[in-house]
Image 1 (tube, rainbow, N blue to C red):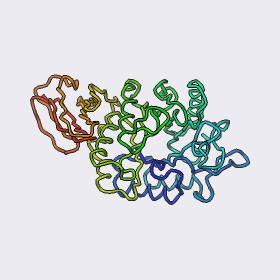
Image 2 (image 1 turned 90 degrees about the vertical axis):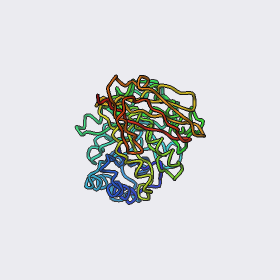
Image 3 (image 1 turned 135 degrees about the vertical axis):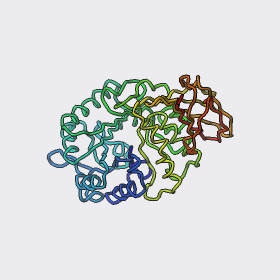
Image 4 (image 1 turned 120 degrees about the vertical axis):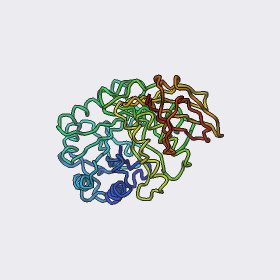
Length: 375
């Protein structure tokens, strides 16, 4: 869990903006809710490496350097994340937004040592090229994986094989070479975009891409459906924010907020820090939810949890309210004399002999329950 600079700011970052976001994680309560990693995405680097080949921070936007920045992030009780690419150029350099060619190709061991020396706790490693087979990608990602482990520093390793590349995320078990891996194209702040390839996906397209991959996720190896768009540019309605957060929690997704946390409305903060939703996402069993049923509009998802509970989401992908129901047997609940049914968003709970669930769900909304056998 953490915050990433890209979804709101793109390349418009500097050390003051990053430190302001880190401070907001603390004052808003997000750090205490679990959002600990502050990830500086693309565009932090100078256009060229130093004479000895070492990476350098942009001297104008990060004049004190990245080790200095990491020290200040750590002093707030947070962890420091950074961005790099296995190719010659990062995504911004490849796309022409940023000058230079400072990708890690040929510098993997050197860059890993640099990151460790800077106190980096998290590396986002982004492919950024249309070229390369899946075998080429596996080799490149494994090379950095070995380099990071050789430093002796505990650095979370997050990869994205899909940037500027056909969506290879679903076609290999990336848990062999990374801690978490992107399964989809980039997320957009949209409920649906209609995208299936080489374009930004909405929430519903990402759900469709990740649903078949549940068997690959587990403790220490996570399917990553991309960063949260909750609160980004104020695009989503309150119902959409809750549904987006719910479904990422159901998928056991890494929760990387992407909104401007320095100007965050209370309702957005409340969605991101909702204890019940965070608890489901961070459940130690680490199982991704299974989509039990869909008709293209109404969907039923269930996720087993470590304490014997089952999280259930009744999702309405459609544009009008609809009634959705599920039974205890469909949700995979064991027989019990009684069940405690907790409505995650309402914050209410009740004990019942029959945990069959039904709700009228608003358009682009969700009903979210945690059901616990108590008999």
